[in-house]
Length: 124
Image (cartoon, rainbow, N blue to C red; front, side):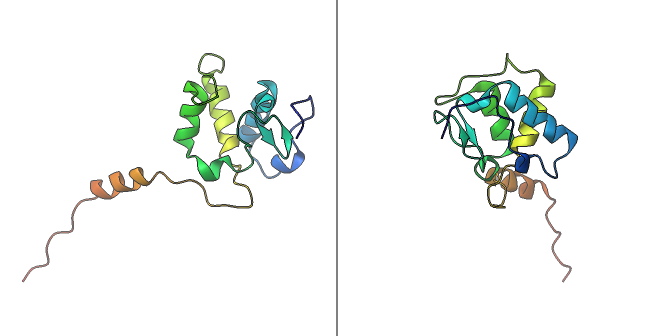
């Protein structure tokens, strides 16, 4: 893989995307995320490839990672506006590799199921 260049995001990653998701691809490009991350086989090796990031991380996890950093990744909370963060994460949520299912927060499922009212017992 090659380090980031001024090459645009591959068009396959822009096809069938909403305007907000395309804006996120622009943020990814302009903030030089590909210095550390690859997409479409092009980019850096310091961070993980982003081609299937949404199959491994939930949207909430991506937001936290972008804003607070962690591991080798620095925090970008002060470098991105809320609109840029929203657009970037929205684009990243479309990256699921070979149509892998999106990552699921299993604890959220537990919380939601505990919030549903219990079914009253059947009359005898």
